[in-house]
Length: 300
Image (cartoon, rainbow, N blue to C red; front, top):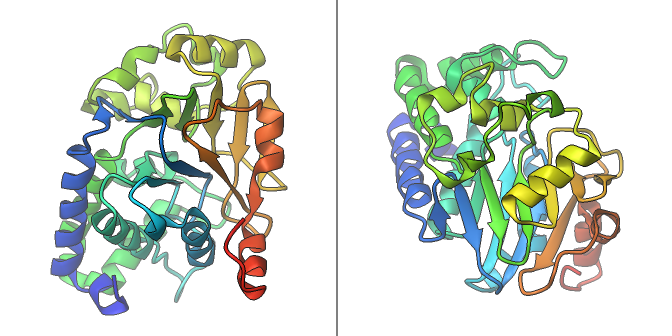
């Protein structure tokens, strides 16, 4: 979407609602999960937090225009630390992602994350620079004026259409986070197999809420969830990985895609998943994508 389209309420709402239809009608989606077959390529990313430079790097690394079997996961797209006139304009990132979904239907996969959920629900959340939800709302007011409310409602519909997880037939499951270890006594792993309802988004025991807000994961919990979901490797964001990719424990990889040492991990869907240690080593620093372009070479 152009800058003008990102500030035109009618166009913005129309694009988001069209993207909602694509997400909900995805032939690979069952319940709250997108299922990818053993063919093609998947680029997995971590928290983006309104970093347009890293989004462009991700798209080049993923080579989304290189074939109809190239898939990309995006998550935690809003609430960055770069304010304009003291307000958050990260709704523009949602508009760009919606445009990508329409351009590459069934291949751009925005996963539900806690910041998007907080914005949809109007729950306060902060990354240390103020109430991100309030700053986002102020950005909508500044750009859209009297149309800010219908734009916010369209954003809510877009967030509600996001899948909770993506899994590959080869044995990888990606979600923004996992429920806290203390939540496992009541958390139902079967939430991934059904459509989400309003109660799933609500604290303290909504299953989707638990999935996107959970921290403090333990190796036994990771093993239990991997077994319940029938996968070998879990990939999450929702944390700070200093080098962009971190093997949190056996079977759990964390990715970060919003800072200077951001990374993404590109996998061939026909191959069995590696260990989390190997996956962290294989992850590509996004700055290297620029270096490859400067050398006149394709992304590695």
